[in-house]
Image 1 (cartoon, rainbow, N blue to C red):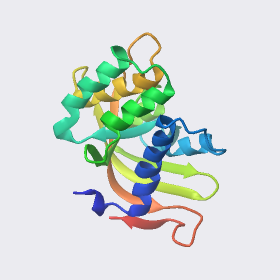
Image 2 (tube, rainbow, N blue to C red):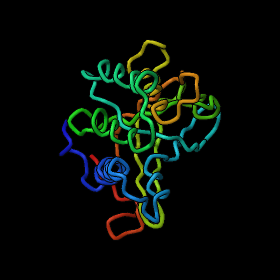
Image 3 (tube, rainbow, N blue to C red):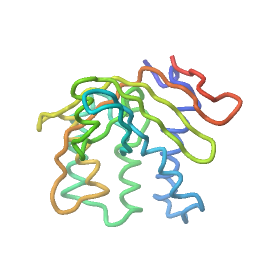
Image 4 (tube, rainbow, N blue to C red):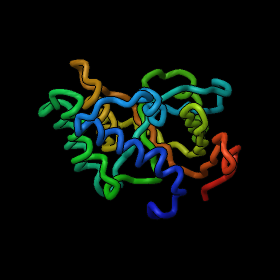
Length: 205
């Protein structure tokens, strides 16, 4: 599967517009007036069902590498998180663009995240491997991404190492992050935007 198989409107929203935001940070451009709204494309509500009941939890998610590259990039993420850390947000943004936010190395069909709360989502996903990611960027844009979920629990799992280290490139607190990772495999996408082409229209597959 290739990038061209995904709907362009979602590729622009989740991938391209996010990369352009990081490009602006790398170039030192002043933040736009709606700067914080731009980050809503990284924080969907993850909707699950199972023993903990029907649940919705806001989680930060991001890109993951293609499978053949994940070991190499997990090593790079570790280096930039704990050894050669960026000095400020501008330098960190430039590192992300150079090493991690390149379309040719990103798997367009997997969205990655970490489990930090270990409550409803964790209970449900470990029993029912289905979840919906509901994205909403006010005032009009919304996408419903239905997925099946892999839980990567083993400490030496390369996806888990990659996502924890990438988290710490931004948010290192002095102790390396060590959380289980979720791989949300895209199954269906619906455009729920308040537009003529939205209102729950299925756009993938």
